[in-house]
Length: 365
Ligand SMILES: Nc1ncnc2c1ncn2[C@@H]1O[C@H](COP(=O)(O)OP(=O)(O)O)[C@@H](O)[C@H]1O
Ligand SMILES: [Mg+2]
View 1 (tube, rainbow, N blue to C red):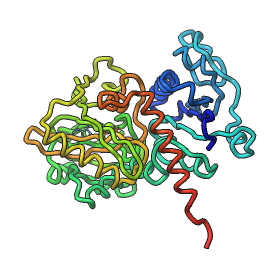
View 2: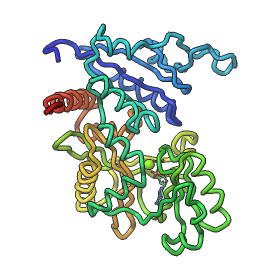
View 3: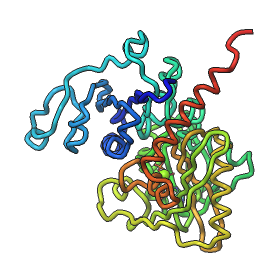
């Protein structure tokens, strides 16, 4: 790594996921906040179809960016800026024409938060922000991650999982007996609440199962918890630290896709969350324990349920949380005393130091 030289940082955003638009907003916020004296930025946008495109900084900052190779014909999008130039990122890195010191893949959800791009970057021997391939994949899978948390003695909700090939064994009555009502039916590997249903009665059950199996070959069904949704930001590699806590207060039945992205008033945020010091400390400790158990490094937003009688359950860890100006992860750090721009410095340093650490490992006997 060049000393006292600007770091060449490539930000990859967009992607083939339901959070494509959020990712563009995250990337825009990062570019706005990052210390320009420290980094040379290059931008790659991945379209919804999967094309890799070179993007100008001004186009991203305009707030009007549409990641498509060809200008769309419809009027609604006619004013949007489009890009037709394919990125030669892989060539640049592979052949080493242009040195990329570190990559920040700010891709939320599948094809970005799940180990896929992490694998590609690892093969290319480039440091990247956020957890490893393994940790990304584990955290994307609600079934595997819950099994590991349970094994470590971390409180999680009761759940059952089914693969498509044993779908015939799923019965409403058995699940009602096992989990009570309501229960939640989810695709095992997804995010953004896509494909998730809350089931209160037999009538809604079949549709919920069908919906979840549209998105994954494995579904997870969980006991429904009534309580607060609490989030904690964790940062670090070997010695991670926890932020203050925030609360998400959905105004709908649960924190659904609509509440997250379509309904402007779908949820409110309270930072810090209005809970006792003792419970806050317990949640922060559990956040760090969960982060370590699920092999996270760099960053992770650990999400919890907290019941009225103070029972805590870990719900999930998001390994590439939102980075928009109103996103919980950067807000929690800001309110904990670490500015957005300093948070970015820290994440990039963590990426580089992990890469240097792993480079020291022997690769032959
Ligand atoms: N077991 C549960 N009990 C109560 N609410 C739940 C439960 N599971 C999910 N939810 C609700 O659904 C939302 C999305 O579920 P989550 O597991 O976080 O999936 P995603 O990865 O899509 O965010 C949660 O934020 C919460 O509002
Ligand atoms: Mg969630």
